[in-house]
Amino acid sequence: MILQRRPPSVDPGLLAERLLALRRAHPGWNISYDSGIRVWRAFRRRIPEAGEARAGIRYMVRTATPERMDEKLTEQAEILNALPPLPPPAPPRTFLRF
Image (cartoon, rainbow, N blue to C red; front, side, top):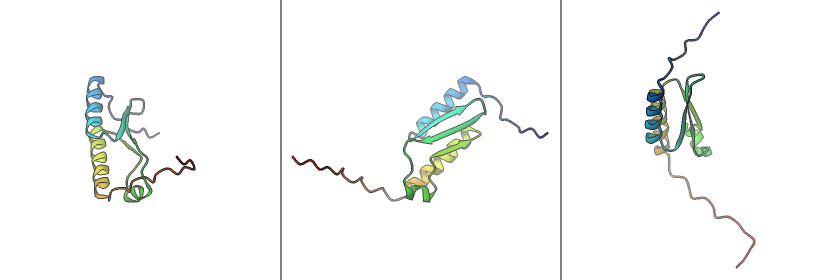
C-alpha cells in the first residue's frame, strides 16, 4: 500500500497569523485552512466573467502551503490587472414610468 505524505500539522497561533496575513494581502478572496486534510483554499468573492476565465482567472485555488497560496493569488492578481476593465453593468429595465 502506498501512503501519501501529509504536510505537518500547523500551530494554531501561527495558522491565525498566516491566515490574517493572506487575507490582508488578497482582500478579494475568502481564504481558509482545512486542518482535516491540511489544505489551504481560497474562493474569489466574485465569480469570474467569461473573459476573465479565458485569461486564466480561477474561482477557487487550493495549495498545500500558505507560501504557495500567496504565490498563486499574486499570479491571479497579475492576470486580472493585465485585463482591460469590465464595462459597467447595464441599467435595469423597468416598465414603470414616473
